[in-house]
Image (cartoon, rainbow over all chains, first blue to last red; front, side, top):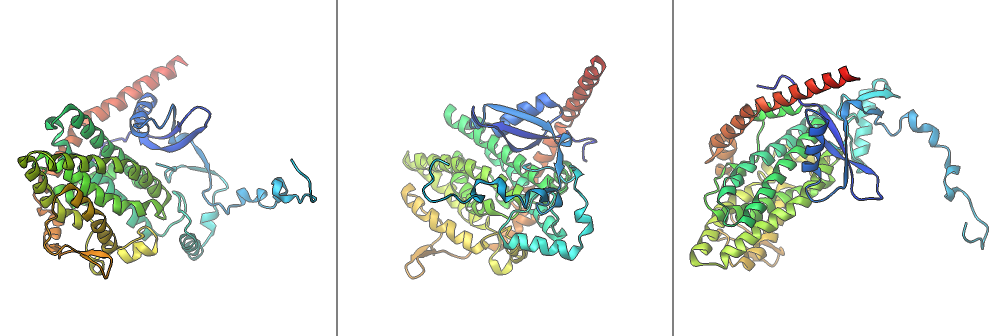
Length: 96
Length: 333
């Protein structure tokens, strides 16, 4: 009963308004890019949620391991000095 | 949706999961759930958790698309152009909700085709409420107010479900459902304040949809087979009976404003509990409909399978078209 081949999966990114970046909103199946765009419009912007849409074949995305404790992210773990809150300021210093 | 499917490439820093033992993975999972963290698509989860989620999300997705049928029944006969436009928008939303949910289920490693196939072969279920017919225009109102109202009560806690993609889909769906509920209420309010016939039509619809709506919350807590485990996994946040009571407490005052009655002689305010008491639910009817013997079970499935089969050539043609254009683009480059 199943079709021989499914339409490929696309990930959808929407810019909700000018000045903001595109955000991932979801995914859908479509035969090609232009169909994916039209369907993304119908599925994810029925209430004017966006002014611009990107669709990306899900298979083209390269992802890091999902585990947040992974060694991949470890190098950033011990560099608290990258945050301004690391630095104590002397009493009375302003605008710094 | 909302996260890559399992087969997404894992080229960087993979392999940790392979090294960790099952017990370690289980304990990390347990800690994540205990800390109210969200599980995401490629996290390790116990098989039973994955199976439960696939079953629940698929059933939910199937309900959305089967639910298009009873309402679609009235699109051509809506009483005005505006009502027709509103109903079309609502039915289109249901298709969208189905899509959000199928996409969420797919992140658990099951394909859309498999899910539809399971539905079509009767191996997965959809909400029994859609096996009742929409006999009059007022039924569209009653569905919006009561059925969507019950669905919202069920779904709001799911926005905090432990599985990220499901929770995110539910946030979207809940936002859109509140329009559905209001449009239904407005239809009933208009009818209830119209002619005597219109009023009777509204009352009749409420009489028929009331009990099936209460059944939507599922069997009583002491008979609900999946509840305890789902609550431990934080997929479910409140028990069936708790949600049912919440719905009754919410809806009774709304019925009073409609000036319609709810068909339950035992329904009354209990000052001691600070909640409404209501009469016993006919669970034999519930199980009869779940097992396939509701008024419209066969009709719904036949229609669904026919629509899928009739659409096959379109799906295949779109793939062939895409392949042809891809080949041409390749040749030109």
